[in-house]
Length: 310
Image 1 (spheres, rainbow, N blue to C red):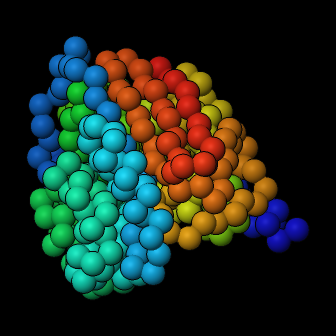
Image 2: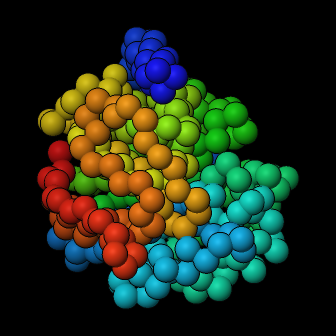
Image 3: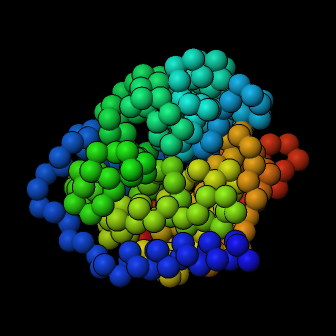
């Protein structure tokens, strides 16, 4: 009963926020952040993105298995936050993250999580990843992956300057960045899921303005972590309604190695749920489509499918 009540409350929050309407994109230039790069050519070579969130701790060895999976998968690595437990200190990045996922640091595009902020200003995170993490104090940036545009955002809305609200520095940067990169296909990444069936962390409704900006610009995929499980959703609009024409398919991939969470009542449009299965999500990106494959450590259940860009 408690789970159903929590899920209903979370849904009510999302509906209340979405009723505020869609914000018009601003006309002013991006306030801060990494300068946008040139749009990728339409016929760019197919590329692979692979990664997960909620990864390394010196208290367990599960991230060793997921790091071993990365050894055999080419392409660009992403993290989805909470990279080094428990506090994202320089020592934890060096001793816990470094020997496993850290061996792929040169090809890694990180996302910042809430545990990174247990260290003042997330300084351990920004120092470890350097320029790859975006500007210190912000944590948002973008890059090209073949024909795809990739945006990385900071979903710690209670910490990031200006929060995640419409008109905030991050939201304005996001809209301007997407307007400057009119690629056929795009993927976004941040830590806290807007949609989730987890029994632990409810939906993070404060990310809704960022999701709305993604939807307004036709972004195809959103990758998140925070809940230590794998969940795949059908394409949805900001209200949580199924939208096969312009909706965003969200994946929750908090399966990098830390403790496993269970599920509560399934959220509408949740299509696949895996609990207790560490692994990584592989995305193979072409000029107008994507294939996903959840790759578990030995003996775990996987998931696979294909989507077409808007």
